[in-house]
Amino acid sequence: MNSFKIIAITHKHFDVNHIGKFHIEESQWHQRLSDLKSVMGIDELMFLSTCNRIEFLLKYAHPIDKKFIKKFILAVYPETKNEDAEKTLFSACVFDGEEAIKHLFHVASSLDSLVVGEREIITQVRNAYELCKKLNLTGDLIRLVVQKTIECAKQVYTHTNISRNPVSVVSLAFRKLRDLNIKLDAKFLIVGSGVTNTSMAKYLKKHGFTNFAVFNRTFLNAEKLANELSGKAFPLSDLKNYKNGFDVIVTCTGSSEAIITKEIYATLVGDDKSKKVVIDLAVPNDLDDEILNNYDVNLIAVNNLQEIAKKNLLEREKELSSCEKIIEQNIDEFRKEFKERKVELAMSNVPKKVKEIRETAVNEVFAKEIEKLDEQSKETLDKVIAYLEKKYISVPMKMAREILIEEGA
Image (cartoon, rainbow, N blue to C red):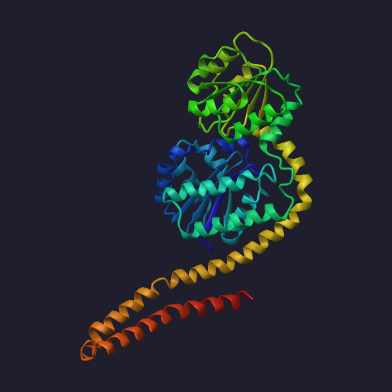
């Protein structure tokens, strides 16, 4: 268990915009993470990226020190400037062994989230694992850990009120928008039609907003969301030429660079001098920072939702002790499951060895004696050997499990 480690870059120690610098687009996962695994000598690797955290789950037999972290950061992010690497070096959290497992349980149970009680994180953990597994980055240890993590998180959500009346980044952003008293006939540009923007768009429609234009790289997805909103759909490439005006932009894409550049924004805003609202829920941000210096914009972004998130934490604090009890119980269970798995792996060669002994006995050591037996005697002997072979495999496993159970008790 000590070989399981986590390197975490989270909202607790970094500004969300800084975290965005470490986002990796899914199309690049295979090459960048495979290279990282090879260069750093990592046995297993999983990458988790959300709007408020970047986490690397590792199976790595050696201690992780500052020198390792800096080499690690520069290996996976070769474009990183030295000062960014230094900042990450001193603020990234490293968890080892049982503490790493406990941390992951907290993450998937949404106790470590910017918005405590937001259930989306459990899906993000599961999807991250499935993709890394598909890319042959993970192995048996991370499989066991993630399996137990999902089980623990489900128990937390089922047996506590931590996610009752759930608050999400989307709902927090809508609260901020509502406070601005935006008119119901305001023109909305929706850039991106993924899960986050779809959720935000449904909030807007539910509360009476009616004027939507949806832009997305895949036009069919833009069309699908636009149909739900009774709006118009456009390919993302048309954004730079759109001149029908807007009051609010809602943007969330998986791009590693700003989608709404100052040139595109200038075209969108035209000669309109009125103050605009931009809801940017992407990490890193979709809106070019320079736009804020040249235009009157009320920006609602993940990093400026943190104050509301703190109030949300206070409201849910009374549930935290119940969640901690469930997590501790699952840690205890995992210790036992991990020991059993170690025994299974250690004894996985037993069947092969027993079969080798059988073949040697039958074909070499007692070959002449067996050859003298009649067919019925050979058949009986074969049954006896098969019975012994089965018992030699199953009995030690059973005994080992009983020892582990006694040790646990």
